[in-house]
Image (cartoon, rainbow, N blue to C red; front, top):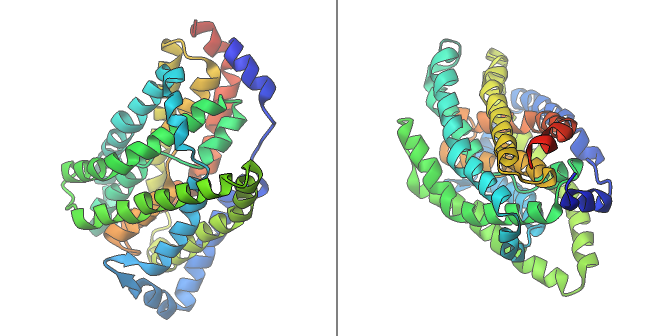
Amino acid sequence: MSVQCDITAKAANGAALGFFERWLTLWVFLSIAAGVVLGQLSPGFFKAAGALEVAQVNLPVGVLIWVMIVPMLLKIDFRALHEVGQHWRGVGVTLFVNWAVKPFSMALLGWIFIRHVFAPYLPAAQLDSYIAGLIILAAAPCTAMVFVWSNLTRGEPHFTLTQVALNDAIMLIAFAPVVGLLLGLSAIIVPWNTLFLSVLIYIFIPVVIAQLWRQSLLKQGEAALKKALDRLHPYSLSALLATLVLLFGFQGEAILRQPLIIAMLALPILIQVYFNSGLAYLLNRHFGVAHCVAGPSALIGASNFFELAVATAISLFGFESGAALATVVGVLIEVPVMLSVVRIVNASQAWYERGAR
């Protein structure tokens, strides 16, 4: 173990998944079931909720997404960007995987599985939409849960904070062009105005609000910020689950007709998670990066900012679209899949450190 990792391990506070995060997959399943049932019992309510739009932005979803996203962005300290040079190799690997590999590999996997392998078993009218949802999901690097994954791998906290802050800064500029490019290459019509509006509403404005709020809280001390985050956390999770209920209220009929759609959409997501985390891990080992940096790097390289992806998919293609459903499948499998990556990273530490010299 390197000196850097040894210090990190001794400083680790044993943080682990909280009750709600540990059982997130269960809550997601229950929300899906509730949405499907309620959609069959009260279709009028969901149609009315879907009609509440301004400039192609659904108001109920917009409010819920803000309740989800702002508390997550409140954790981000953009002052950490000046520390990028301390972990430049790990940062470089993560940026390469996040922005040069992950979105493009997902576009390729979508083309292989959705356009070809599973095409005979999926609704033909939704094939483009499913691929679009997968691309949107992969183009948004995770912002919140990576702090949990980093803790579970005894990751270097300053690297994690720096990397997340850098990804968020890049996302302000690169998210729309990357999504637009890949949708265009996939022969999917790109509604540019709506795409840029989504970036404004779901990235730029929440970042500004969160940072102003963060500065205000920090004037009262770190304890005030921690207290606010603890208070907001249940609302953030509740907003996520409420969004899923709304979404599956619309999607329920299609899912009941073809329940295997979920599994078919999950396969390319699973492949890209393991491929990208493995690629980041091996590249870090090749460049001699400390294990406590390589672990978070692999996890950041593989995980997705699914809240942003869901909001963007709904704005671009609508509640009842295959794109919205594809992004929600990412939510469904996030926790169990990322926990398996955590276990692989921890179990392979001795092997990693034999080669990272």
